[in-house]
Image 1: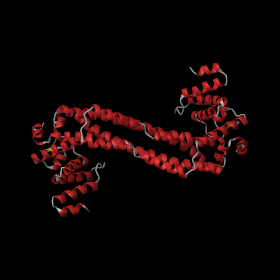
Image 2 (image 1 turned 90 degrees about the horizontal axis):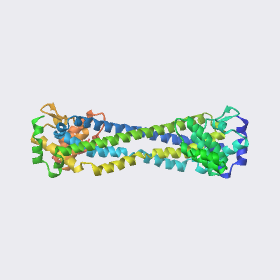
Image 3 (image 1 turned 90 degrees about the vertical axis):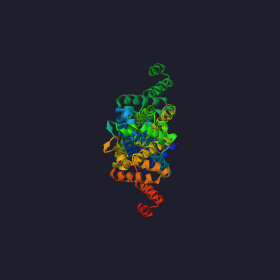
Image 4 (image 1 turned 60 degrees about the vertical axis):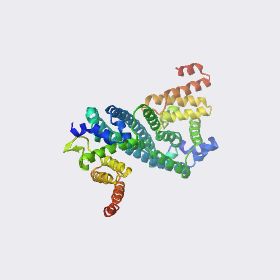
Length: 232
Length: 232
């Protein structure tokens, strides 16, 4: 383990506001990992329920489509048969009621009910905890004069210690800095978010939002020329 | 075209109650086919929106899973890194908010709003129309002494004129007869529904429901012995 990480608990105890200290104890962070594993199980169950529901809806669509295309081939002949007339009226009444019921997704309510229970039983971090964790990381960056791009790569002195940050992770660090009126770090992290946004395929961020933060934070630091550039 | 089908409009005009006559005109039945094609487009769009949503949720689950499994390999080492701590808290706050929002399916509301508009603009049959269409078919069966199994196969004198009826289609004819207190035809069509239920893979009907209708309709016709058999 890198000496910097070993020294971290002391550093955190000295630097981070009280609200963020909740999760400095290892045991409490471990509880968050347990929460995450429960959320993951819920999410997987929800996805599997949805896939089953979509499969049933596809079967409905296929059945309608099959009969509808037979009818379309020779409408007059099809509709002169009372069995077909009954089937057509049935498709648009009792069959369609069932389809609409299936579109109403009962699994969302179940998942939300479970999640409400978990929120009472498990440890869940709040938005304030997120602010605390972001502030802790940015203070560490300052104290050890860490380069933003390196931190974003999860690197220290060229060695990778954690997963790379996504554009969204960098954006959140910029947004947290902005909320704390720290426009210097807003600019640093939004710049990093922009670089990563251009490289990423899955867009976890929105380009114009990053540019808005960049324009405002550079303006607030008195760099009007740079600020105007971000507006175009 | 079979002469029976040619003679049908006259037969319908003589036999079917007023409420069912709405859809004896070919042009009106054609309008129902148009309604069906609009509903089909809505259903296909809804399914495609859902598939896209599920794909995004799977991407979320994959991202959580990837980081969570790295953490699980060596919890202490993972949590002693402040970048990881920030990422963990972020996953359980801002990332999870986005996941929950995606679970809340915005497409259902859109589809329902469209369907409400269609109900104002297009011709939609009512439950009474379904009763009318079912009654017309059953009266035709009586007038021409048609065998239930043959009608269910869409056959007349051994020639197939329409799609086969499913267990659900037969069940609906039985249910409509039951609602009209016509227990003789309830028994005929529920028996056919039961036969087809045993053969079908996709269960459009529920066995015990069919048996309940059979028990009650045979009882009401005075066949207590048969009725008891359906209860076991």
